[in-house]
Image 1 (cartoon, helix red, strand yellow):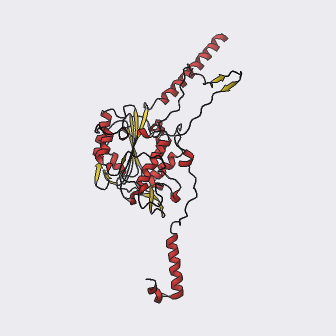
Image 2: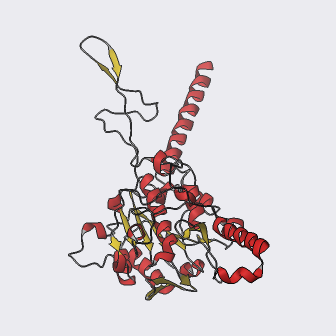
Image 3: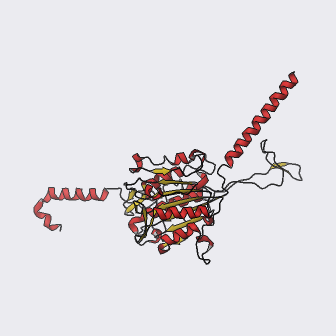
Length: 383
């Protein structure tokens, strides 16, 4: 009788272990994708739109840090702020005040720049309708196992987004492009993020499956700028993308944060506008979709010729040398980007520039002293 009891307990333990393993495997393959792509677009020109370039480069640096290589990123920048003659720090684009975080770096690969950033080229990239002479770096070579992140930033209105201040793309055109992508099996799941005024109007017409959308503002609301910098003379970022970058800084390739966490990155108390999202077309529960399903790509793997029993912990490989000593073979992985230097960068020694309001306050003090000393009759000597 005791033997039968022990056998039944053992069978129960083995079956429970197998169920747990199946659950873990099912969770690992729940997204169903095998590769990741990102299409990041800044649609604005001119120096006063500096923040839109910084928005796009901030997302670009984050997805590269999390594992999406440049070969799987299509970066479209309508203007080159790093080389603009008004830039006091050439070859840099900053996303934080006091020039603490340079998101331009030294390895940015821009695929479409300047007047190449048009509605036609953007739609051709999405749908794959490009001339045969188009280089591989300018193509979105995705398939039905690809998870795609599409990020747009610029100036927009109710149902449209401006390109270059000369043309615009409508929400209907964008919805039809995504439908073409689905019919041509160009994506498995798609995450659409837009930071512009009345951004929620851009996903109202979507009708393709397996698509999730986020926007920085509702219809009738403006998407506001953030982080003014007197030394550069413009705002450095938009509020929504600023808090999105702040959220992504804490994400690592093995992070368990999901899309529900992403929906909370910028509440109205911080954004001033009301961020929105749409999940009715997405076939999975957003809580089961990890942030790294769209913002990450690389998985750490080891190639081996040995058979590994997945029901037991993997033991470290040991090698025996001629002297009889055992030495464990160790492996290490190098991050694709210097995370500590780029994402959690410490303020470096830099040229001092006055804080906000300092110049105005100084002139006010000078005028007050002058009036008190000489009075109004000597005001003509100033001008």
